Amino acid sequence: MPGASRVVNGGVVAYNTALKHSLLGVDAALLASRGAVDPDVAAAMADGVRRACAVDGVPASIGLATTGVAGPDPQDGKPVGTVFVGVSTEAGTRVFDLTLGGPRNALRRRVVSESLVQLKKVLTETDT
Image (cartoon, rainbow, N blue to C red; front, top):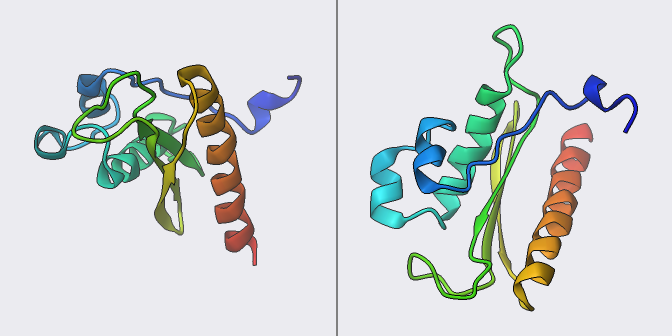
């Protein structure tokens, strides 16, 4: 989309659990003890996105991260449809728990949609 570079510095896809640690700085002990599908992991990922997308040493204004189980099998003891969305801003970091259903592709689309809903909620609350 023309002009997107004025508001989007970049992004990180850290699908592999080891990358959550090496790229986003999620504590390795946290990942080892709780697994990747955890609210504290989502928070750390969102904070890590802000740092990873820093420009000239200034963190990005917003970090948005998702971690969850799209299926077909449970992961880290969490059932399919368990999702945590982390939103990090200068005001702090919030995590939203989602429980979604449906086939894998539909679930993944809903995670994107619901993540944007939660981001809008945080930004609206911050603006007031």
